[in-house]
Image (tube, rainbow, N blue to C red; front, top):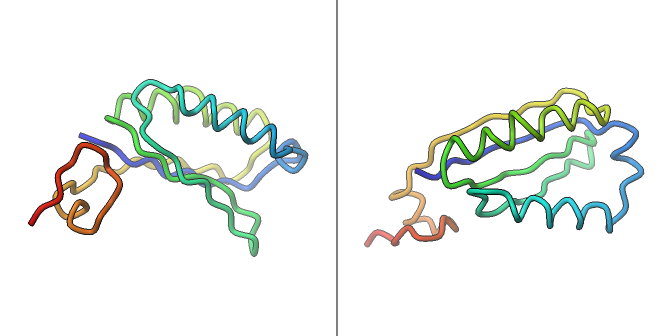
Length: 108
C-alpha cells in the first residue's frame, strides 16, 4: 500500500546557503531511493517553513528514508521543529480525484 510522508522543518543556517545545484543534487539522490515514487517540494515564505510531500511504495520504504536518513540529517544540519509524519492513502477515492499514485486505476 502506498504511503504518503509529510515533512516540515524550519531551516538551519546550512539550508540558507544551499544553491539550486545543491537542491538538484539532493533531488537526484532522493529519486534513487528504494520504494520512492515522487516528491513535491514545499516552502512557506511567511514562516520560512520548508518540507516535502513524498509518496513511497510502502511504510517500510518511507520510514527507511524518513526515520533513518532524513530526520537525523536535518537535525545535523541545524533544522528546527522537524516533523515527519506518515499517512495511509485511500487509493480508490484518491484515484477518483486524479491523484498521481501510479499504478492505481481510476474508479468510474
